[in-house]
Image (cartoon, rainbow, N blue to C red; front, side, top):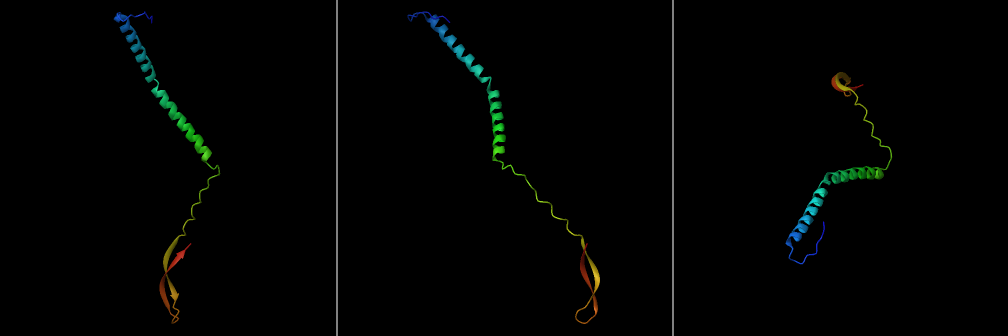
Length: 100
């Protein structure tokens, strides 16, 4: 873009200079907006990597043990059995819990 000395009477040159400046600004603005996706993806990747590194540093590094499951409960049931009576020496029936 050539600049000509202006004495204030040449409005054509002033208009062209202004139009060229606006076109350059608009072109720069359009070019700047095309990179938004790359910036967001880069920030997301940096956050994930930083989280992984931070989590690895915060981890105490020791092995993790899980309590073993409790032993299975014994199989139990009730059976009617004859039991000696403690008071008079006789017998009676009682339901007794029997487990294996």
